[in-house]
Image (tube, rainbow over all chains, first blue to last red; front, side, top):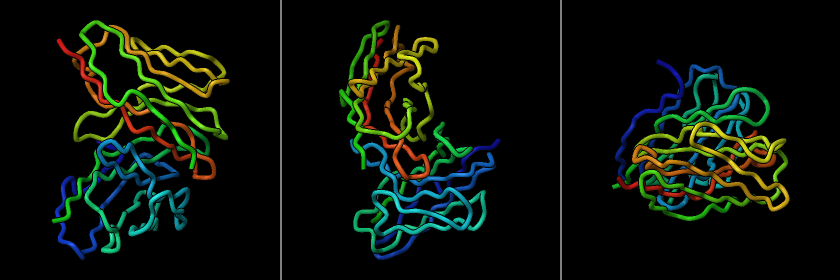
Length: 113
Length: 113
């Protein structure tokens, strides 16, 4: 089996704690993305990375951080500075250097208690 | 960032009927317009996409109609089935964002038996 693998699927966190969501891919995707999904809000871009050791902020990057130390991995850290972190987080990847299909993982649902 | 406006927010269609979802976009640097389908608790998956050197693309029961001058495109689901019940998102390419996509807020489709 392969594709975009996100873990954990469900995560509970206390206020004030940082948490890291894992995203791994074996599709040789050059670009990877993190989106946040809230009910009725669609998908909003948090961060994206086009190459290793480089990443850019999306529309709602405040309170989040990422790293891209290797091509296969693009973890997202939700920090205590994120005021409303409870959401469904989606990681995606894309091959090539032009427009095309984004392949999504199955998502991680984070709940802050 | 460019907006993608999707309507309706929700839709109920009888089995065998036609489901129509509409999308309008602002200026985009690239011509690539996909529709994604998402089932509860899963990541979105590409359903159908159009690169508008044509005004219409059909794949099975699913058709995209594209109107470049109006900056609108729509998804038609013919002979809708209960298994089509899902959330549908339209998307358009972002500018200067590593070929990420801007998504509409989604349409929740329910096909009744």
